[in-house]
Amino acid sequence: MSLPAGEDYFSSPYLKSYRLAQGVLHNPRSDRRTTRGIFHIVEGGLPVPADKITVPKIAFARLLKAALQPPADVLALPLTAKQKEQARFFVTLLLRPVICPATAEDPAKRMETRFFAPASLVSNLDFVEGIFGNAGDPYLPENDAALDIEGWSGHTGCVILAPHLAGIRKKELGLPHFDDATELQRRDGMCWREEDEAYNGGEAFKVTCRDERGVIVTIIADNYYGYCKKEVKTQISYAANLFGLCEEEHAGGAIAFPAYVLGQEFYAGRTVLTKKVIFEEAMQLLGDRIELRPERYAVD
Image 1 (cartoon, rainbow, N blue to C red):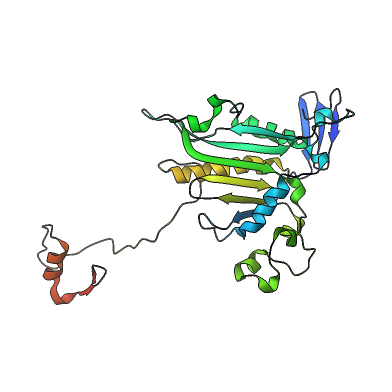
Image 2 (image 1 turned 60 degrees about the vertical axis):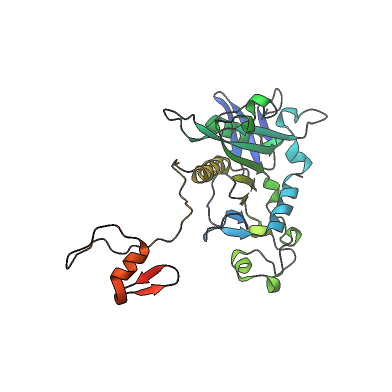
């Protein structure tokens, strides 16, 4: 579907495709990318890591609306490029990647991730499918994760390709003027001084909205194949962390809580009472050597 019928070449604003003896070569406009300033996360849900850019909810809502309204030429299926009337639509792919392998008693646990791409970028889905497989027609009951009681991990992801979003203006997205912005918004560039300022400086980005249930929606404003693969890995990692008792090579993150080490060794200067006692008895034994706190602990 990535080449016109009977043709060996296709060109669009975001990639060029060539038929070769070994298959089809796709040369996207973006084939290498730094990760600096790329990863944006919507506020709310779990805390946003300090090294990521925090996006207001209103901006994500407007990015999502714009992502689902690409230009007509981006929606055109390459297979029909030479026809008088071209087919224009979104293409989609359902994935069910494993987040926890099967054990002796429990079956493997899989999340679900649904890709949506304008038809001119159908080759992106071919790339992802080659790595993670194809879970079949999402509209058939046998492929419905919600009906897979034992196999579904309970986590659902969505990825929308929208390279046309690069260059969208900050003001269009409801971001505040610099004078009305918070310190965090100023730090992350989620505000504007001039009305024609582009979001993320007009450069490619991916923005994710996710919560503690494991519902993940990501918009990728680029057609770089690597981002598509990386996003599936990121969603697998997120689901693995939330599911627990499993590990994934790229997981990298954790929900962390403070802990305190009160020393590694203990030396008894006299006979030590080893019989277990309740809290109140322990406080009586320690007597005036300790200061009892209302929260039911003591300081020596």
